[in-house]
Length: 334
Length: 275
Image (cartoon, rainbow over all chains, first blue to last red; front, side, top):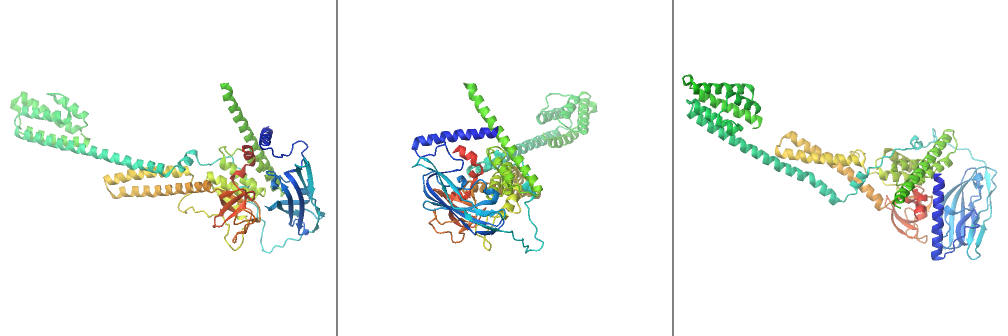
């Protein structure tokens, strides 16, 4: 069905194209009506001759048949090998036919064929027939060449000059067909065909991104360093103040609370020990430190509300806990 | 009206696809028949020629380009059409430059061409692929190249910010891989561009004269007067029915167009319809 469709469409196309061309330039196109089956699609006036060398050959040994066509051809209907129908239909019975060379020279076309007789009974290279269309006589004409006598002798025994020589066949990979396509993807083909300018633009993207990333990283690092410096300064100020007021639990509590509010954004003005412990836990401070802070604040509360329990080491312990807290917050990234 | 506009191309596409499939099936059937005859020790060239004709009817614009080229080349070689086999394998290698089977088959077919003994004139171009570069598809080179190039810059940035010894190894390795991949892409691109700019032509027949000008009256080429069937060259130009060709070994001459095969000849039927 598909073959029929292709042939039908090709026939329709060729019909329309031939009609259109003839209508335009008025060339002498050979008519389809009455066209012989062995018409060689040449237009003009021609003679054909043939010559064979050698005329004595062994079976399946080659001889060269030179076919010469002379005459005046009307373009575009010139003699071409693929359109020539000069051999009789049964030539394949007697010969292997193989095209060799061809050339054209001032109204003379030479086509060479390599013929190999298949059997000893072959006596002639058959007469060749060239059917052409003569525009002067407006009909199809035929030119013939003479048959060439041929002597075919028995095949010679093959002589193996190389010891151990064996017939080489095509490798096994030639007998395998494929249905799987491995063509490059359309993306790859398009990428490879990009101009160097586009490729350079693409290549510039990663270094630019890296430059932007470096700038951002350095800026972030600078901020972190600034904050750490401020925190250290705050800690030093707090510890210095704590050293001055180490006797007074109320002042120590106030300073410690201020430190927590500045350093860790602690929301309460006068927090209870439990609130501080919860806030420190939320900030990721370890349990022993939290516990020490809670005990310290409980001690301060006790001192504030029962002055006889006041201790001299309250300020010193608060300084130590502030330092521990600073170290831990630095590690936690605060 | 609009419905017709939609349905007509759809039907035409379906019809062409069906015809394409039918041609492929015919080709596969004829090839299988040929294989059977070869196994029985008989001459199967007619069957392989039938398979070749069927494969040639297939649409070259279909996606299966390397598969089509492999089938065409195998059928052509087994049918005794050496030049067409070379052309088909080269056609397939245009779409997949490193296809191992196509490369092996092409090398074998080239070994069957009867070059003049004792000199190097008219030999095909040698493969310039470096031994250290693995043969991969272009997509692999592109993906590897892009990833390693990006990694190279990231690693280089990391090294610039915090220079340590082990951080220096990563950019060097990334740079080496990226350079290899880019070189692979460059080779593929250069070969494809070469095939498009100066397309290959294959000599169809034995004893084709190579003239120094575009006509039979010009003298024959001094070093390479006659060309053997299957010799490969590249088309430099055209003047009338004559082509100027250049061989990989440097010889430049003129041949008649009908004596050589080019990529357009892989599908004679389709080209006739297009003309």
